[in-house]
Image: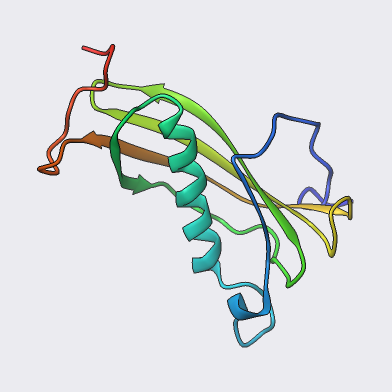
Length: 133
């Protein structure tokens, strides 16, 4: 097995899981990278909201390298963890894994990203995260 196909040890429930559909494919028949990036953003926001109440905005998505393609019918899981909580920002890690063809099928590590979100008020300006100074 290559590193991209090696199964990961069991972990907590994913922030989100999505079955990939034909509408999300590119001309090569694989899922557009931008679709995966959108789900990474959503999964990161789910994790950030576990710590930060109210409004958050994405300010950074650090390097994303795709290690394996995603196909129609894959069940894609987005696992998250909080890495740092600052005064107004929160850094979240997102790991993406695809189960090929059906739930319980062979797994492939797709990509990972580190994201930074900022807690903002109604005016869009940064606000301190409650409980942080």
